[in-house]
Image (cartoon, rainbow, N blue to C red; front, side, top):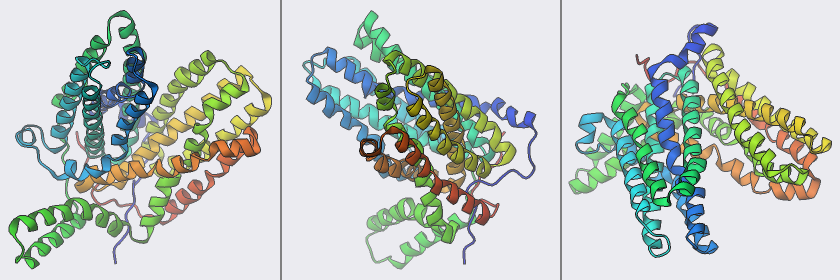
Length: 463
């Protein structure tokens, strides 16, 4: 009988407030800031910024819409995450190690694609531009896989929330550079200079990779047992051609073993954990679908929405994330997860109050403050939880699966948000979006009571 393991154990002794804040002084945190910037930079360059360029070039709206399919690459990255997990890149692996070699290759792919886009004319070379955009998106999704794996393996679970919020801060700064910054450059110079400048900014991530160190991990006994099963398969099927046996053995180790490892470690709780991952952010995602239409229908101007929901809201999200990064090492990730789940649901009631009060600017500020603060806190704790849930032998594959699962139910349920608003109005919609957060609260409470305190494959404390 297998013994289930805790996704994110609390520290042996509660840290003081000073020790909790000092988590941000660790060198790994600074590296995470640069890697977050490198991860966020390509995103808008193949979406809204690219759309602006295509519009100026006179490309039809139909074709511009088709370019949004480039984003599918981010949604299916789990398909090649086993390759990132298991394949050793020639030469680069020997120089940088498993994680850093893949991050560097992805960064060079992104930079190359951006340079290719810079020297492409959308009005005459649309096919070439699409190919370069796909190359950038593929490199970006691959970089996300490798960076997530590096982050999980580079720090122990109680430091993962701080790693997460630093990553998010760097990511947001990159969005500003690739969004507003790119548009300003285009207005002053040209789109060629925009994409060349963005390719140059990718050196931020390249330098961070070269300056960092490869995480040191230890394979747990459960993983070694699974790998021996693969070897047994190879021996039992010695009659098959050697090349075929190698391919099948690799697929079992790269694809089957990550799933088998998760279910063997967590036993009966595995399905509860997966349900919790899928439901934790349902309330935020569902509410977020109708946020901007709600502000506009209420009578707020675009400038007010941009300033409060955009700029100020991002700042409050970062503050909430920083707070989560401090609370996790002090109180443990599960308590912070429960607090985040409760706050994320309750703040939806502030939106209901705003709907009843009307376009009161002060109430908009209060609502955005509470919502984004609680959202940032919950997200940083949730990323720390997912990080502790992975086995370091299959980090890239398992985390890619978890990160995909954490948004899927929310996007599905959120698809009906407009219908709910039309049926019952905004006040009751926000009450509804609050209530659908209750299952997440119940699940985290259940997991707190039933999970033990030892995690196989936890990354060691790395100086």
